[in-house]
Image 1 (tube, one colour):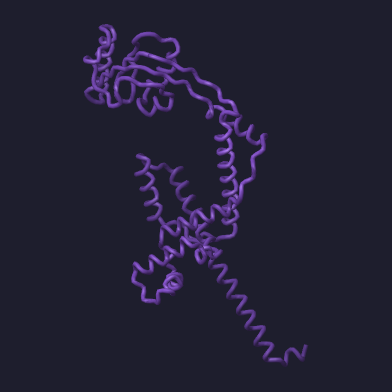
Image 2 (cartoon, rainbow, N blue to C red):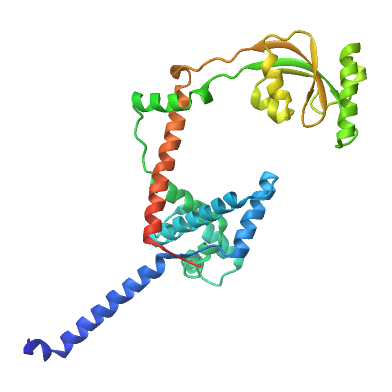
Length: 305
């Protein structure tokens, strides 16, 4: 022990190693933290979502947007920690373009290295998306082949989604209210009731944006095209109703309807939709694996505000 105490060179080596290990620890710790979205960034996320979806985001949507952004930041931070940006050809090509565009003063063969030193990859959305794709691929890994038991289970859970819904072909005559008031809607209904008595004529109805004849529409298409009570009311009587009937309300006004053809719903068989079931099973597996991976990242990283 006294011999070791009298070796200053050894002390220097040990101290240097300790400092080096400490620096590695601090560097790794710094690389394992991300910044949570700021209030301004959250406002921007909510505004973008509202613009895309045509409605205001509620508290549940807002929380989901924040969670998804944190997940993207976790994946991006992990991609940088793993050094994926230093070897990906798409990223390196983009960095070269960025360096040229910015007029970085460096020899041509050093532009990418200089761009990396300047961390241009952190502010490039295309690079960010590329690295997120790489990380999702790494997180999911290769998918196994689904067994018959697994496919049968997925099919049974989602049988209704694979079934062919009932479809109806029909004609309609539209009577539009003058405005959104209850009085206007009541007057339009009276016109529709009288038109039904007189016999619906194209000339006596108002023009409807989507036309007067429709072929093989299912419940979803009816909802998207008309809305209101019309989709359910039409499907309820489509198999048995003959001649004109109504009036039935959509989001736009009152309609008189006449069914011209009806195709009942057809239950799906696994063999007929096997490809779709395999795709759904694979999508579920990808989501599960990615969710587990992100959960491990949440445990490894510190999220700062």
